[in-house]
Length: 339
Image (cartoon, rainbow, N blue to C red):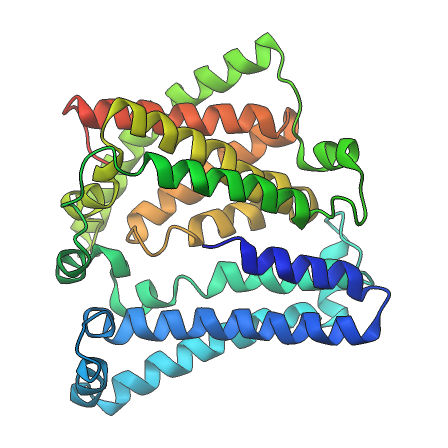
């Protein structure tokens, strides 16, 4: 998910703590973000292929062909998930949260952050909840987008660009030059120069987690299949990452995910909202590319990274995350396993 809109929201929220007009603008901008996610969910659930068709009338035709009950359920659940996030504006709810988390129920920036966290947990899973499958595990949609047909290794530049902006965005999300100087920003994010022991811990834990969740995924898939629950299609999910199946691209994708996602989730969110909520955000951010079995694995991996971050720092969890992804990419390119 693009980081720029959330950086704008954070800047407005920090400034809005002292300015009523800007506070109103921050709330309006927040509603715009929620509405954008709502529209994405509606499109990805109802007619993703038609929405991306060059025919401007394709989406409307597909919409008209769907049962009214189906369309109504999609709009209702998509809209309702957005409304759920607004519980973050409840003073009572924030007080309850503050009993267990380092959260200030009277802080405007914390309130805006809480609404965002809840929204990012409940809203991205709506298409999966309604259809039983991740939107981008749609073979027809992948064909329209050319997913799986890209040149191997072509993702390296995009991953580098994404990493740069995620790092910059994470610094602004925690208030650099507004609430914190550079050094205190690093401390808030948990970015440190890791010791040799922490580097070794990050590498070892990343490799170990691959083995653990390799077995876990097999067990969960077997259980899901036994109970008739749809599982993640290995071929379709591999198509999503095929652009990273070269050594250089795999390294770049692993560094981008390891450092970028750990900064955004374990660096920005976890210190304020805890291991579980941050892991739920981490899992929900993958709901467009994995079915329920895959999301369960991502959730548990996120908790593992969260525990590592809690007892060490974000630098160590980033090394572990990056090594996990790199090991997995290496096994895939060697033909030993799939994502």
